[in-house]
Image (tube, rainbow, N blue to C red; front, side, top):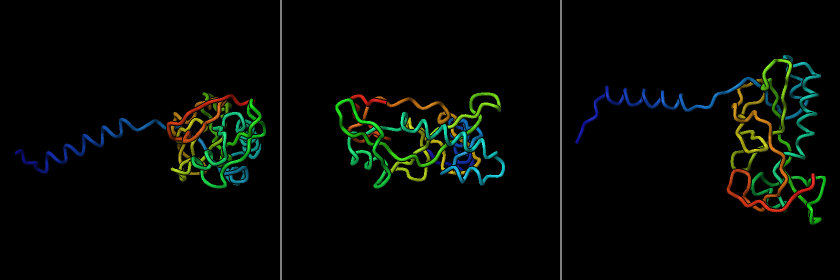
Length: 180
């Protein structure tokens, strides 16, 4: 049986730390806010930029939020009282439910400083401290100006189908078509 000495353990820990650092996802500068007022209160961001970004996130919300055929399925993924009825019905005439927007993200993710990108954020019942995009990508947990995972900065996809159960963060079934 091989014995470990302190030099071997230190070397193993150092290699492990380097490997973890290499695997960490790159981050970009951005901002996450619970609501419009929180952004306006941040003196480093012009209020008109806050208003424009919030308006953009709100307008995307209905199109990109995960869709559910029942309120119970939505609440299973997002929590009680965290879902709302979509402003339209399914192609079969039934109600569609989606999570409420928990916040929004903004930043200059598209290249130049003049291009500011914004999108709605959600919080799942399984991980209520982390803001997630409509595509279920972790954006971060801090509000205000912060570092955001680069993978969370891509534009969310439009949801044209509903999730039967266990969809957000789970392997669920999609079916039907929602009119947007």
